Each structure stands twice: as C-alpha cells, then as structure tokens.
Image (cartoon, rainbow, N blue to C red; front, side, top):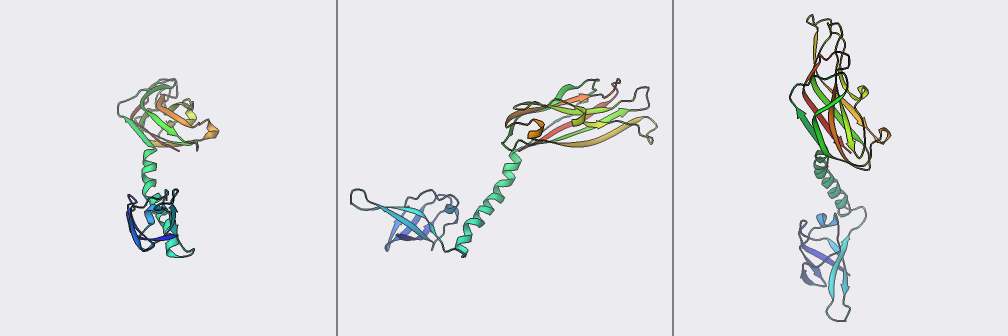
Length: 231
C-alpha cells in the first residue's frame, strides 16, 4: 500500500503520514539514507503493514515512490550533490596538517632532525601524501667553500622515508648581483609521495631535517614550515 506525506522533518524524520484516509504520527521507517533529506509534503511513500497476531497493523515507511524522469526523481541526486559540496571542505581541511618553527637553524654537513614535526597524520588506502617544505634560507657563496642550505624531512610510522637532497628545499649557487656573497631566499618545495615511494596506509609522523650541503656550515634557515595533505 502507499501513503501520503503530510509533514516531514529532514533532520529528525518526524512525520505525519496519511494512510487509507487516516493521519498517523511518526510512522517508523526503514533507514532511507539521503531519501530522508528530500522527503516533503505531498510525496507518496510505500507502506508495509505488519500484524503478526492478526490485531491492529503496525505501519512502516519503505521509501519514497517516484516516477522516473520527474523532478521528484531528481531530488535525491540534487540533495546528494549538495551534501558532498557541504562536506568536501570539512573533509579536506581535516587532512591538512601544518607546523612552523621560527628559530634559526645552522645545519651541519649531515642531515639532522629538528623542529617542526607533526604527528597523527592518517593516510588512507589511497596511499598518497602531499608535502610542502617552506623556509627562509641564507647561504654564503663568496667563501673558500660555498654553502648551501637544505631542508628535507623524515617520515615515520606506517611508512619510512629518510631525508634526502632529492626531497629537499635547497638554496645553493652564487648570486653575481650580491657582492656581499649572501643569497637570501624564501621558498617552498612541493613533494608528492605515493605507494610507489613506499607510502602505506596508517598513522604517520613527519619531522624536518636539515643539512648544509657542503663541508662549510655557513647557511642559516628560519621560519621553517611543514604542511602535509594526507590522502
């Protein structure tokens, strides 16, 4: 049998349904999913009557009855698209992690871990991490052994990625316009790591790592930032 929706709350599913000429308040329903959000007065619903002992039947709403190709049939798709549009920013925001360290680092000739670090990074079955490395780097080149400043990272937890020059923000090479011999750069490097790089599903921690890049230790790094988007 079928009934007519007289009143409906999209938030709570509280309802008044007219069945065989009588209005029934808060008729139980099988979970309608997105259908709960699009039901409105005038809609027709499929009703199941249950009377195991032959007494007064209990009614249950089975779902909304629609004619294919009508506006009523399009309502579920439109509601789903609207819900995705509302939720997508929140979902993406929850996957963005960022940390900054403002102090100065004077790195040595080998990679060493230091701030900033971020823990609790959840990687899904997609097994992808987008990493942004940012810093202000000063290096001196008009010296006997020119310097370079590198900022990389170490990834631990479900995956293990070691610091490397190939995955580092680097400032190196002389600047002919700087007669003092210093180069000052504010830069960002973006690195995508995937399953092919050894990224696994699970919880991760990332920590910055620094290196001078030569036998000299004259480079300086400030305003260091790691930003991670985990997928």
